Every structure is written in structure tokens, then in C-alpha cells.
Image (cartoon, rainbow, N blue to C red; front, side, top):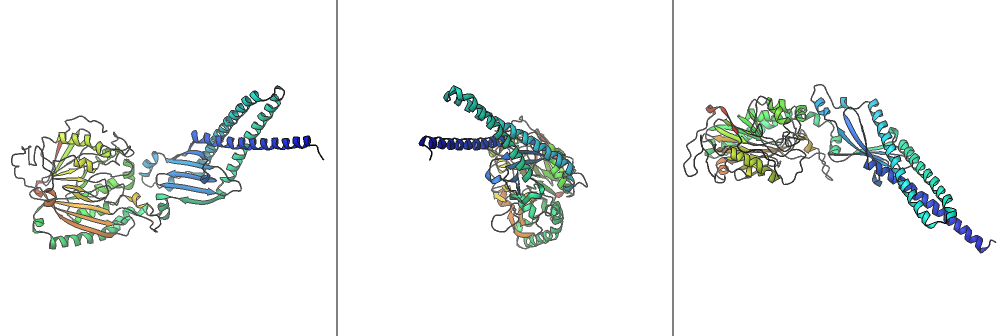
Amino acid sequence: MGTPAGSARRGTGVLRWVVRAAAVLVLFVACNTGGVAATTLFPVHAGTLNYDATLRLSLDPGDISTITAPTTFGNIRLKFGGIVPAPGVRAEVQVKERITELLSRPNISVRSLQPGPLELERAARDAATGLALRFALGALLVAAVLLGGYAVWRRQRARPDGRGHALRLVQWGTVLTWTTSCLATFAVVVWTYQPARLATFSTTGILSAVQRNADLLEGVETRAEQTTPYLKNLLALSSALQDKYAPQNLSSPVAARFLLVSDIHGGNQYPLMRTIVQQERVDAVIDSGDLVNFGTATEAEAAGVFKGIASLGVPYLFVKGNHDARSDVDRELLDRLAKVPNVVLLQPDDTTYRVESIGGVRIAGFNDPRWFGDDNKENAAKQKPAAERFIAAMADQPSPDILVSHEPAAVEDVKRAGIRVNGHMHTAALEGNRIQVGTFTGGGPFSHFVAEGGNGEELTGQPSAFDIAAFGDDCRLASLTRYQFRNVVEGRPAYDDVTLINGSRIESAAPPLPGATRSTGTATASKGASPARTCSPELGRTTERITATTPVSPGP
């Protein structure tokens, strides 16, 4: 039997080794945490010819042995199998701007833009080297801090004869722990993230819907062509009902018909629009903005939007929406639209407005000062400077018969107009003489790639909507016909609603016109009577340019 003193010494020795083992474990975890944190603070950038990626390791337990790529339209998750759990990898992938230019070229497909094996190998090697270096430096910094702290504590508490020996043990232990942490992490990452060990590939959000309906976007224009017979039948039915049941005053002569559309959002459904123009004898199309999604002309070019507009054969009057630019000074889309022969920019630049008269009906409007990617705050207030500049420029002009801008707050600030037209909200509405046009494409193809949770629906989107405004020979709105239908993108068009509204009820709801009243020529005092006006198809088309009288100033 040992003595009590011997038992105490053995107990103390065992406790010391337990403490040392715990210290090593804590140091190992601390080194790993420091290494991962370093990749988070200083991520690695790697890329191929058409793509860039920012990579970092993840401490989230849900990311173990998983590569996650978050995007605007959902997340891509690659789950790998392995004996030992590996740190998760977060990869933020970005498409280089040059890819949109390439997509607009003929005979270029998405598949041809995919990186080749050598590109991927080089990018993977660069990413692995960068992550390893950052991890090693981060783990070393943590180890050095802990070692320095221990040295200070030891000097304060240890006896002189034991200080050097204990400190050397800690130094060697720290070096070994740091080395083990780095080698173990590198080994498990290399072992786990092999193509052969990929267990599952999954997507969320819009990407999930796209994955389930991979061929849908490729046929948007074709599906629009296929929907044309359906739309012809709908228009014919509406026309027959109007002839039979419309009030007598709606049958008066028509000076001009306008197709009101909005929020195309990159959807090439111009075959449908062309059918409407032809069947309804439309004299001009009025688009209240958001032609694209991300503010680039190359997006519209790739979708065939410019060719679609040119194919309509009638003037296409346009004001910019908040998705039609990438900054407050970006004019790329407007400049490209100006090259389309039948496009009329109602505000071609910051100092010019264009008043277009068709059959004697005057149309004017102004651009949305917002852009894709702005802070999306106080949006109504941002419209006021643009509206005030327009009001000042038009102060000595006859009030327009049709005022057009993108957002509701913009047209609400302008009182002098026969009817006020806006889009933006993706839903049709009527408030006084303000006509809010729904989205012609159901919000564009992207809106249809939103998965509905729990009800089995693969695709969803807003209804497709458009309005036809007919003006009589008195230059006032005679009728407004509102159409709504669904599922054009999906190729399953379904009728929702057709509504015929007496135009006199809309114009009579207009607020009193301060100052000048509507007239054919110069402004008339509000107390005087307006000269009689006559509109007719024989008056044709004229254009008037008006220069802004107030300088451009940024919104709030």
C-alpha cells in the first residue's frame, strides 16, 4: 500500500495531466476558430473568365461539410459526405459584367459561357491556397496571444526555478497544437470536398423553381406567339360585348386609341402586344416604365426587347422606371431606346420634355429619378423634385391630355392633366383621373419563379394586364377598357377579367386645374373659357420640345 503522501502526489499528477489535456483541447479549438475567423474577415477572391467568387470558411454548425452559395434568387447548397466533419464553405459567386454583353451576341448560349476544367482547376487551386494561408495566420495569431498571456501569468505566479522549464513546455505545446490544427483542417477539407463525395445538391427560392422548370425561360417568346389566338378571341369577345352593351356615348367617333402598358421587366411578350395593336387599331403604345429588371440595356438586348418594340409598327412612348437605370446619372437604357425608330422618350434628358400629339391628343411625362439598387427609402419624397421641374416647364403650356410617369406619387403631384397614368405597383387601379396600369408581363419572367410554400404550386406571378384608352373627337377620354389574364409565361393562358369604363366618369373626377386650363394653344386664365378643341385621326402626329426652366436637383 502506498502512503497517503504518495497517493496525494499521484492524484495531483493525474489532475495536472487532465488540466494539460483540457488546455491543449481549448487551444486547438481556439486555433481553429481563429483560422476560420481570419477567412471571414479577409475572404479569398478567385475567378474564371466570366465569373468571380468570394470564399470564406463558416463556423455555422448548419454549414458543416457543405458549400453554400447565396444569391439574390435563392441559395445553392452542395452537401458532401465524409467520416470527419469539415468546416463549411461560403461562396458568393458574381457574374462579370462582360457576360451580359456576350449573351446579346448571336449563337452564344449559357452553356458556352461555363468555365472549362482548366479554369476551374486554377480557380480551385487559388481558392484553396488563399484559404489555407489565411487560416494558418489566423490560428497562429490566436496561439501567439494565448502563449503571451500564459507567459505573463507565469511570471507573476511561478517560482523562479520552474519558470523557464514550464514556459518551454507551453511553447512547444502551442507550436504542436497550431501545427496539428492546420494540418488536420487542411486534410479534412481536401478529403471531404471531392466531387466523388458530393451527397446532395439543392436550391432554394427562385432557383428552386428554375431547377424544376429548367426549359421555361427559353420559350417565353414562343409561348407569347402561341398565346396570340387566345388573345384574339378575348379581344373579339370584348369588342362584341362593347358593341352590344356599351352606352351610346361610347360609340362616338374615336380620334385616337392608346395601349397602356407598364412593368415589362424583361419579358419578351411583344408578339402579344403586336396582336393587341393590330386587333384594336391602336395608334400608339404608352409604357410607364420598368422595361428591364437590373437597369442594363444588355438585358433588354439579350431578351429581344428592342426588336420587339420595333416590330409593333406604331409609336412607343416611354418614361423611365426605377428599374431602368443603375444610378441617378445612368442613361444606358435610354440611349439604346433612342436608337429604336418608333420609340418616343417623353423625357429624353434632364432638361428636355417631349410633348407628343397623336390625333390631336397631347401626351407628356417625366422619368422616375430612382434607380435599381437605391436605398428604397422615402420614395414618394424622391418624386417631388422631378414633378416640380415638370410643372415649372409646363406652366405656360396647355395641360396634357395624358400625363405619364412611373410611380403613383409622381403623377399625384401634378394636377394639370386630363388623365394621369402610372405603373410600378403591378396591380391595376383607378383613383379619380389617375389610371394605374398593371404589369403587362405579369411582372416579367422572374416573378413567375417564386415557389409557393406548402401548396404544391411550382410557379406564381401577378396577372398580365393592359388598358386601352380611346379618346373622342372632343379630345377627352371616351372609354377605358381594362384586360387581365394569367399564365402566359407558363403557356396556360387563363382569362381573368375585362372591364369597360365610361371615360367621362374618369375625366370628371380630375381635380380642379389651377392656373392655365386645357386648351389647344397658349394657356388660358382659369376664369376664362377654354377654346373648343377638336381631335381627329386626320391631325396625324406632331412633336413639341420643351426645355426645363429649373435646374436639376437631387431628391431627398
